[in-house]
Amino acid sequence: MSMTRQAEPAVTPPPAPGPKANDGRTTRRTPARRLLARPEVGVFLGVVVVLVFFLIAAPPMRDSGSMANILYQSSTIGIMALPVALLMIGGEVDLSAGVAVVTSALTASMLAYQLSMNIWVGVIAALAVSLAIGMFNGWFLMKTGLPSFLVTLGTFLILQGINLAVTKTVTGNVATDDISDMDGFAQAKALFASSFEVGGVQVKITIVWWLVFAVLASWVLLRTKYGNWIFAVGGNKESARAVGVPVTFTKISLYMLVGFGAWFVGMHQLFSFNTVQSGEGVGQELIYIAAAVIGGCLMTGGYGSAIGPVFGAFMFGMVQQGIVYAGWNPDWFKAFLGVMLLGAVLINLWVQRTATRR
Image 1 (spheres, rainbow, N blue to C red):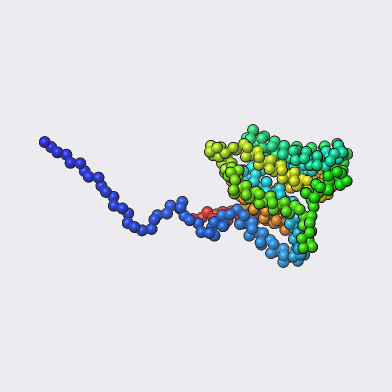
Image 2 (cartoon, rainbow, N blue to C red):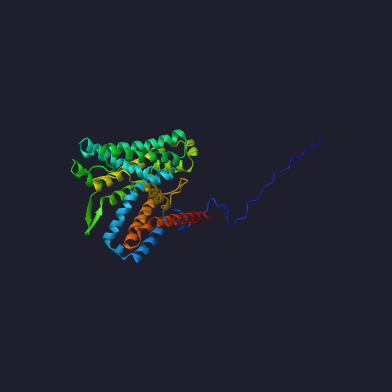
């Protein structure tokens, strides 16, 4: 009888003790790199540089009243830059944001004045119109699949034409009538365009609203499920949809948030000047987008913060007023902004690469 003998299985000796191999996925980043990974770090450094520059070049900026004026200018940009930034993190842009501000103010002013109603009726109607514009942008975008650039460019042209044509038809002029003597004006002005004194300096209420909205937006982005949805749809909407994210709702609601911001800024402009020029607002959408980009938001979506656009808007306010305080030709403002935008993009790119380098 022949007997077969099975080979005993080979036993692999355990690896010798030593340092574990690192494939890069479990690398712990240093605190400095984690800090650099924040979207707002680049613009914060830029704000410090610009602030020091203008404090030296424009001595009037050192006055507390001048700083309050800079903060006010920044707030009128920053209130709109916040929802625009959230929209960009969600992967979209809105080119109609600037003229939508004017549409909101015109709606409130003309409706209340022409119908001799309490001004709050016009304010509420303007809110409904602004939210409807945002809802239309988001709905049309999701329904057609067209790029948001084209959709909102169309809305921009429509609103620009409506603002001019309707205002001329209703008032016979390019501006609305003065509403300062209407019922409810004082209360609305107190909410949207009042000021208060701090240490002998007049501070506009929009500065307070701007900071409140910034804190609220940061909390939504970092602490809520909705904030996760925003980042998800901006990163890859198909992947987000596959894991249950309501992509359509998120996109439409982001456009409606831009509509809310347009309404608020429109009400501020209306109750600050008591009248509205129908041709205004053109070009402001680029300022809002630039403030968001300077603040670290990527045009491709999925990356950004709410604090970054606050610094971005503050930088705009500093440049806008700093050029005046320095006694320079204000025509250089846009050129300075262009250089600042390109510089911020390069800084943000460097920060990202530094933060992710292993």
